[in-house]
Image (cartoon, rainbow, N blue to C red; front, side, top):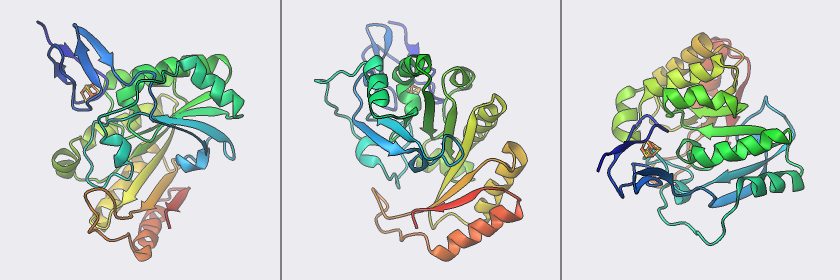
Length: 274
Ligand code: SF4
């Protein structure tokens, strides 16, 4: 039987009958591309929007946040690995897109956030929720590793109002070998989404192995390609998942990163997890 190509993320998995892609949640079921986590959020919380983090979009409001299992990256330092690397999920409690919107309204949220794990891989669900959310005036937010396909990038601005994208390193080799993604795809997608009018904020988890040269390159990319008005969140690393031996990011490194960002005239720089 013919393989199906999944066009959600830039892995472009080619799936044989019954086969799931790298994320483990999109699969070829009887010749139809099926998102197995559709309707089954594994995490569902009301969060302050600043926790996403988004500091320049609907400040001081609450956002209904949801995520599923699975991820298209394999970051050894994942701070949400219990969800992102999980394979099993509860299928006894289906939650429809309209039910999610009702919950957001009930909890007086002004937006819905697709977060905790990579929303690109559950975009079919996120998109259907976003359509219902827009009907009642709620905004939609993604917190993403930015590895969606160019095709999805074209579609996202029709449904998503704001996005926080991780730039985890400025080393293509590291992105490919360790994270199992691609730096140039992430950078291009950040530019495309910003150009298309989506509110973009950037996050960098400052793992102590990141050198100053890379911080410098990320700062330069944000300032020159996205614009100095693009907020940059630089978060301290705490030992997690497969990198429990790595120490927390020293405060001095964070302060140095902050001053590099300011040398590049980035207007809004925030140090997190400290
Ligand atoms: S979302 Fe990405 S990793 Fe998952 S099946 Fe589609 S192309 Fe593959």
